[in-house]
Amino acid sequence: MSELKLQPLSGYNDFPGPVVTIIMDGVGIGPQDDSDGVHMAYTPILDELLKGELVTNLKAHGTAVGLPSDGDMGNSEVGHNALGSGRIFSQGAKLVNEALHSGDLFQGESWREIKKRTDNGGTLHFIGLVSDGNVHSHIEQLNIMLGQCEKEDVQNVRVHGLVDGRDVSPKSGLEYFGPLEEKLKSMSTNGRDYCIASGGGRMTVTMDRYGADWGIVEKGWKAHVLGEGRRFNTACEAIQTFYKEDQAMIDQYMDSFVIERDGEPVGCIEDGDSVILFNFRGDRAIELSQAFEEKDFTAFNRQRHPEVFFAGMMQYDGDAMIPKHYLVEPPAIAGTMGEYLCAAGVTSYAISETQKFGHVTYFWNGNKSGYINEELEKYVEIESDKVTFDLRPWMKASEITDKVIDAIHSNKYKFIRLNYANGDMVGHTGVPISVRIAVETVDLMLKRVLPVLEKAGGVAIITADHGNADCMWTDKKGERTAMVAHTRNPVPFIVKPYFNSNSYSLQHVENAGLASVAATTINLLGYEAPEGYEPSLLKLILPGSR
Ligand SMILES: O=C(O)[C@H](O)COP(=O)(O)O
Ligand SMILES: [Mn+2]
Ligand SMILES: [Mn+2]
Image (cartoon, rainbow, N blue to C red; front, top):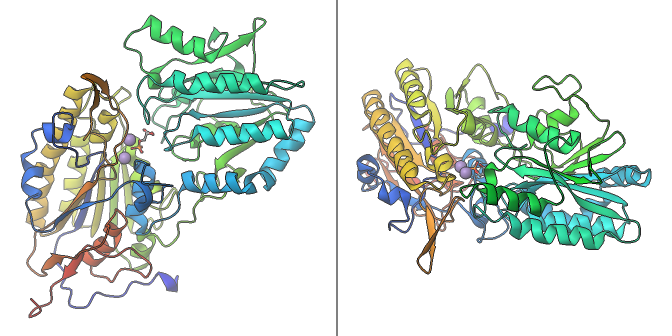
């Protein structure tokens, strides 16, 4: 533990209230036109805060958060990893690419075990998100693995593909499933039999997170494992049929589908088979992993629990070791801010609603679930509604705020962090009227929290993990397409102190990104930032030094 010791910040005077970090999920700084849902919303509080002295923009995408290139939009995982760990780690998207291109992945124990099973007649099933969104998966990574299967002459391969439309454009499924089905067909020579076996929209089928709605995983289990769901001859036929039957249908909400051949599901998962969950990001991969791995599983009735070799693209939870087998070693995110603060005896409080609860705990703590030190920390989850959030854009922001106000009043916590999910979760629906209400909700919450913090004599840090609401549509030759994915825009960074014991100025940091928030927070709590952390965005002005 000794290397986790924080050194006191010289010249620092303590103040009575807490440091409160408010993450406005998905609220980036956009083009300030009518496609920008943050700009379009009525946000008097945020507008005023942005005029303050301790205000800047932060990079929240691409290499600033450990993604392969600056063409990659940010996301909650990499954003909260950076916020909580104060450093930039090469993330799943990048690590998997490296392991695939070097071929290391195919030398690993998991791949070799899978090969043994397929040599013994087992089918290899790939389950995952079929798109190039690069948030949870990338189709090119699936393609490389399929190429290797062909090269190693794996006989039977089935793909259970989830339709995206959330990290990519809302009705783009055929652009990915068309070429994939073609590719699988062309690989089916010399006795090989490769095809898509089942699938469905990612928000309806399989990819639930944080236990928000296990029914989603059950639906996936039924389609992928048991072969239960509406039958089609091909995945493209399924997608086209869903579009035809409902003009308003968008990919992420599609029902499950099962591909049949000669009247039977073409790819149920059976004893002796292998399964690769090819998503690299953990939050929406953990529940399916548990369904495959846990002996005494109670979240839903599996009906049948096949004996398979199950491997994740990565290990999704390093503490709980979920899953046991995986293809690529995840980033080793140690020495997080939470670990340092616990070692220094600093009390903290983390809160969000279900959809983002793991973001301020699990992602924040370097993809580890559970408390670091239960005596010093309190984690609170408010149960999210089970709807598409265009229907309830206020989400649970008020309930979160009530609790935060209580936490400030209690005087028990020196550091409070919270995530308002609205800008992001509603941003993903692409419904402008709802996005506007979502952003206005967050502004109203600031109006509620800040006066309480002012009374307590604390300091607020207000920022976001990436953009989303800041772009609601794209316009091509006068035709608007809903933009439901995250953006590559910077995010606001605002420090609002309500004390007069210290005085700060902004410190210029070249290419400042989200990872600098941790050092800043640790400084505000009275400590030097740990070695290796990205530089703080604030400078403490010592008396007489101005
Ligand atoms: O999982 C999701 O909802 C999206 O793919 C990414 O959103 P998040 O990174 O904000 O969670
Ligand atoms: Mn987010
Ligand atoms: Mn999002």
